Length: 278
View 1 (cartoon, rainbow, N blue to C red):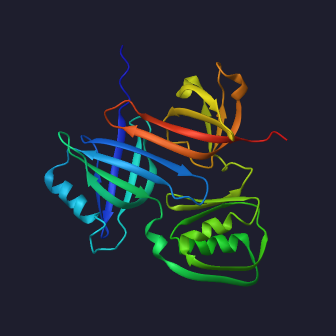
View 2: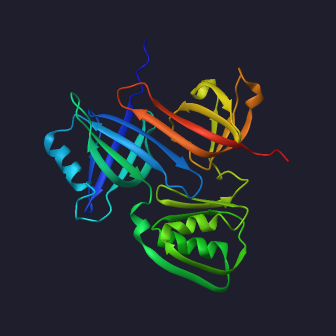
View 3: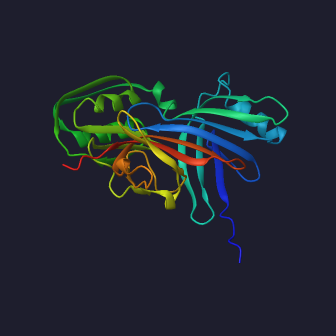
């Protein structure tokens, strides 16, 4: 008896003026991007190919940088397989769109996470002392994100900030011993030496590792099939029969993705730092 194919699922939803439209099968979709466990904006490029003319014109018009409508144009990329369903891979703002060359006409969306809120200029100060969690909660409100606080709380004296609301994430990272970043619609604040709780991805040949891991100046770089468990800031438990020196537990600080509906790519590329055993 032949095993049935576990079909891929890739959906792209685009929100303009509060209206969300979802695009998926049978369109040809290709998406690449990178997430960072720091104050850098997560980035993505999404290509939707062979749309009908009306849909193509709608997307290009509404997401054009020359459109006088300055409201947020948000894109959500979801992917997975039929066996476990689709999970959110990326959320960001469309900063520019264009068409590809014939014969297959595609709409290319360039996206950055939290780009719309960069225009929110504000001033914040906490007289005397405030806890790290209190400050993080205020930043989550300012950046319109949910707060996932997993750091050791401490007192911060005379917190003072003026500028774009999203730049407060970079300021958080200067407080020492913590790691703060925006992942999709969540502000994550955790201890720099710890992975996110409950986020451990087992990576080996039987769970979808592609090739062998590579050593980098900070740890390892490894490619594996897309799943619904891996997350930026989470842990990798790596086992390689071909390269046992790389075996160990790591924290993901950079997570790339490369997925397509009708092409070979459907994987993550994780760069991670080894967790000290001491």
